[in-house]
Image (cartoon, one colour):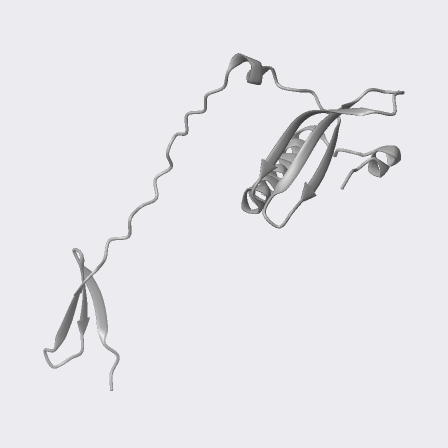
Length: 124
């Protein structure tokens, strides 16, 4: 048995089986995914942001919790300045975005080097 010849014409796919027998199938159009512009609104207070030099990450089965803190030098105390609670899938996307942005930063400005003391201060 010979292989059928396949060809497209317009929005139809033709399969020629030989001896004048042809099969015609209308191709389904695959919807194109369009990037949409996302408008983000932010009030003036939120736009100021919060400085943080320490963070703690914890999780449950349903969510991740990130506490961003400010620790002043010489004081054995940290103040939570912002808490973010998010779904595991979003946390994974955040991790991917952070990895990509750190990589871009290091290509532009050089490798980020952590001091030995800072490595010990990572809170889990």
